[in-house]
Image (cartoon, rainbow, N blue to C red; front, side):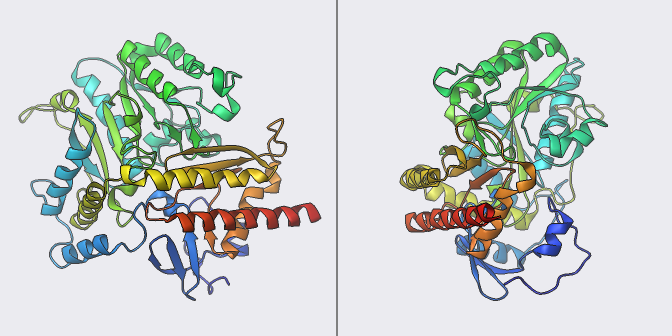
Amino acid sequence: MKSHRQPDSIWYPFTYSEDIQDDPPVVMDHGAGVYLYDKQGRGYLDAIGSWWVSILGHNHPEITDAVKAQADKLEHVMMAGFVSEPTLRTAELLSGMLPKGLSRIFFSDDGSTAVEVALKVALQYWALKGENRSEFVGLAGAYHGDTLGAMAVGMIPQYHTLFHQRFRKAHFANSPYCYRCPCGLEKQTCNAECMDSLEDIFRERGESIAACIFEPLVQGAAGMRVYPVKVLKRIFALCSKYGILTIADEVAVGFGRTGKLFACEHVKDVPDLMCLAKGLTGGYLPLSATVVKEHIYREFCGAFPSERIFHHGHSFTGNPLASAAAQATLTIIDRERIPQSLEGTMAHFRNALTSLSEFDIVGDIRSAGMIGAVELVKNRATKERLPAESRLAHRIAQRALDLGLLVRPLGDVLYFMPAYVITEDVIDNMFYLARVAIRQTLNEHNAT
C-alpha cells in the first residue's frame, strides 16, 4: 500500500526518522473535498484538514480558479511601494469581518511569522511610548509556532525546553487544562481559578510585561484543550486591570473553527493584536496577517527620519497568488455565512464524536465547533496516563491510515478537524473508521 521509494534528502517535520523507515510517507497525488488520493488512486478521508489549513476542502474549484487566473497575470511583486489588486481586495474583505476595533492589517507568511510580528509590535509599541517593557506572559501548554520568538512564548516541554534554556524572556501561567485541572477542581465548580497564576505574574512583573499571548478557547498542539469561556473572559479582564496588551493567537481557531468566525467572539472583549493564518487561504498558499487596534498603529506613524516605523518585512509579503486564494476563501466564507450555516453540521459532529466513549481508554471527550478530540488513558477512573512507550495513539493513527482515514495524534490525544464541506454521512463514516481503528489496535495490543 505504501508508495515507492523516496529520496533520502527530505527532512520531514515532527517525524521520527525510524518511523519514516517503517512507514514511508504516502505520496499524495490529488484531492477533492475532504478526500486526498495517493499515486495509486486510493482515497483517504482527511480528518484533520491537513494540519488545520483546509477549511473549505481540497481543490475547491472557486479557489483553484482564482489562483490560476492570477498566475496568468502576476506571480509576485514586492510589497514596499507596490501592491497587487488581490492583496487590496483581501484586506478589504478581511477588514469587514474582523471584530470591531481591529483596524490595521500587516501581512506576512505563516502563523509563526504572524506571532513574531505581534511580539515585535508589542515591544516597539511600549518603547515608542517611553516604557521599558520587554517581557511576555503565556500559558503552559501554549504553542505559537516554531521560530525563536514564537517558541519563547510557547510552553510544551517536548517542543520548547531546549530553546527556553537558551532563549527566553517569558513567564507562564497555568494551562486551562480542564480534564487535568491545575487547581484540582471539577468543571462544575470552576471559576477560572487557574488564572490566579496569571494575576500573580501580573502583580509581580506587570510593569515589565509587554503583552499576554494566548490561544483563545482551544490550546491546539497541547492536545486540543478546550477551555471555558469564563477563563477567556478572565484573561481579558486581568490584562485590562493591569494594563497589559493582549495578543490572541487565532492561527488555528480563526475563520469559524470554534463556531464563531473568530474564537474571541465568544466573549465581548477584542484583543489588541490578533494573529491569523492557516485557513486564511483555504490551505492553498502561505499567507498570514497580524491585525491590530488603531491606537497601536498610531504609535508607528511618523515622517522620515522618525523612529516611528516598523522594520519588518518578507520577500513574499502580500504575495498576489496567496492573496488571490485568500480573496476567494474570504468571499466564500462571507457568501455561505460560515460558521452560522454550519450549526447543524457542527452539532452532528459533536454528537458523533461521543461514539468514541465506548472504549475504556477514552478518558476525556472535548469539542468546540468543528474541533473534536479524545484523550486516551490507561485508566478512565483515575485518569492514569498511558505508558509513553506504548505509542498507542500513534499506532491507532497508522491503523486508521490503512483503513483510509487520515488522522495524526497529539501525544495521547486523537483529534478531528475536517473541512467544513464535510457532510453528516461522511462524519458518521469518519468516526466509524476511527472506532474500527481503535478496536483493531486494542485487540492487537491486548494480544501482545
